[in-house]
Length: 134
Ligand SMILES: [Ca+2]
Ligand SMILES: [Ca+2]
Ligand SMILES: [Ca+2]
Image: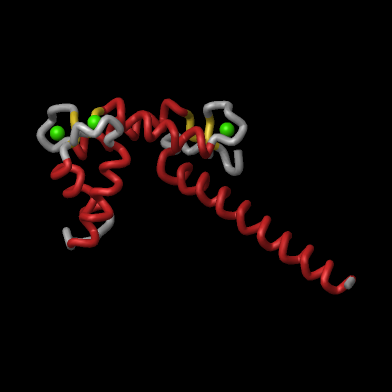
């Protein structure tokens, strides 16, 4: 009985550590990508700045909206896959998720909204700053 309990405790600890490591590495990834001034903190300003830049690279024809073709082309480049069927299928699904009003265009607002959602999910203590683990 005692043995069982110890085993259970171990499992819980391992599972807990796994979740924590995953969250920490997500924030570490964001810091690595978006922390421009190297202070290990990503402010909302920094984050939205790179979001705007990313939007501009995707908006190939410069009409301030991302059409499916524009998105899929960049998506294929980004994921280092050629535009195979499976690759563009995944890309299309991501596109649909971003295109909240389903007008087959991702507006800057829709793009920023999804980015902000990502930001606030990582910002555990809700201080508008992404730091390791909070
Ligand atoms: Ca466009
Ligand atoms: Ca839209
Ligand atoms: Ca924070």
